[in-house]
Structure formats: C-alpha cells, structure tokens
Image (cartoon, rainbow, N blue to C red; front, side, top):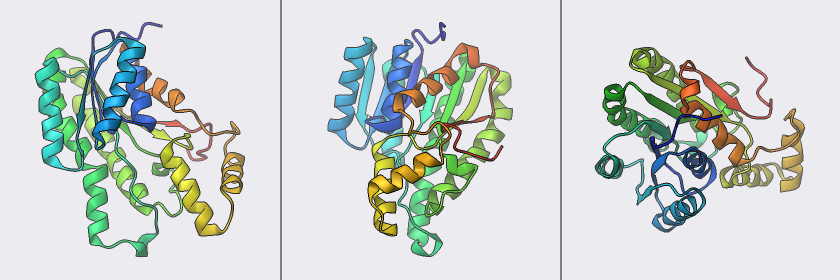
Length: 262
C-alpha cells in the first residue's frame, strides 16, 4: 500500500529512542522528510544518522527540551526554515515519574502539565496554519492506555494524558474541514526503556523480581507479549497516510488487546 507520504514533512518530538524514534523511522520509510528532537543532543544525532542510513530521507535533528517554550520554539523555527512547511506532527514526550496522589506537590503537577500538555498545544498551534494552506495535515499525539483504564501508581500520566485526549477530540471537529485529522495513539506494554523502568519500579515497590512483574503483565495481555516499538510506529505511519483521511477524533490503542474498556 502506498501511504501517499513521499516528500511529506513530519515533526517528531522525543525521537531519540522508544516510541518516538520508532514513529520517525516508520514515517521516513514511507517517504517523509523529518525534523526530530530530544533533550540529548548526542542521542538525537545518532538516531538521525541511523534513519538517514536506513531510509535515505532528509533528517533535521536538534537538541531541544520540549517542556521549555524557548527550546520548542527554536525547534519549530529551525524546522520551518529547513522545509518551509509541515504535513505531519507526532507529539511525543517522556513519561512523568510514577507515584500516587499524595506523592506529588504543586511543582510536580505543574511539571507534568508542562511536559505532557503544553508541548502538544504549542506544536499544534504552530502547525495548523501550514496544514490549512495545503489542505492536508495529520496531528498525532502519543498518549497511554491509561487514558481508558487508569494505571495504578501513574496518577500524573493518567490525569494529564486524559486531558490531552480530550483536547484532541475537541480539536478534531474544528480542523476536519481543512483536511486535517487529529488522533491519539495509546500504547500498552510496548517494550521500551520507559516500560523497563516502570517494571523495575514495580518490582522494587512490591518485592517481586522483574521477571515476575513481566510475567504478570504478559498474563493480562491477550496477545501474550509486550509489543515491539516498530509495530507502534507502523500505526503512526498509517494515521499519517492519505488513506487515513477519514479517521479523526479517535484514540487508537496499540496494546495487544490489553485494554478491556470500549
């Protein structure tokens, strides 16, 4: 299937590893040129070079902390200077620390707000004019299965990613007439460094081994295993495609059937 992405321009944040780099790689394989960023300059440079080598696409890579407005604005300006437009935005951010309600003060809640919600708002605000001008746009927000079934000990993620999901749902109705879609992609247990860290934390909190934690998690997944980042990236690439133009306002779960709710 030709996704119709040859020569399109995609921005992907937090793209040095995990779901971000998997999404960027999948888009590049379908013909997108990229602007990618992460806080670690060395890591994002290495990711960009790997994408270039494997796909032959242009990749602009910058060190930027998307929780900082000035860093994100610098990334957006550099991307627009390089390509002159944007067709696809994949808003991805690192997960906030695990913990329960009484573990966090105002500063922690504010940091989660600036990490999980404000980058998506700023990226979207910057991208919509270019997308409207061309009558094509794909806004894709990476969230979590916790937006449907809150995950124990992840209250910051559960609360703020649910807010992002509702923003997307409202926005989708506002921009659909301009050929712009807005969707979220909610990963379940995809085997990334973030999930490894959560498993290690759960093991330490409950006195189990990491292997016991993982076996228990896999038992909850009808597919019987953790997902691969590349599988997640391919869903992102499809949502960016011309063929996905009638899918908007949707929360797509990539979780091996783990989420029980509708």
